[in-house]
Image (cartoon, rainbow, N blue to C red; front, side, top):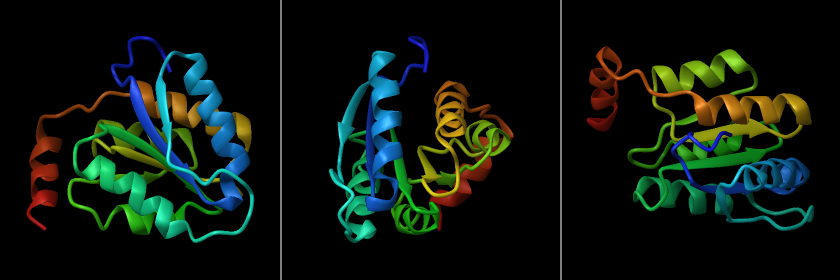
Length: 150
């Protein structure tokens, strides 16, 4: 989450199971000078995660936001919702290697985390790594172009 990450405006959303972690990540990004748009949820009250997944993925899909972050209990549900949208490449990353590779090779534009799977410190490090890792392009761009044909 450096000043040179190039991604100054991020949309973030979560369900009730990951509300606490969302607040931690949101605060960390704001401290680094990123503009964060919070799509909800805003409490730990039970709610339907697809509503938030659609809000975030829809804005990334349309190009309104270059990147987004989604969180739910495991990250699985949010990943499934987000990846239904055109031009969205949502990556569930529960470790640093996945975060790096999702950016280098897949140009992931939505990071998904499981609030009940990763701890706070690891989640912060995954987020930092994901934001700072560039896409390598080259042969990987050809493969992403094939995604868009689906």
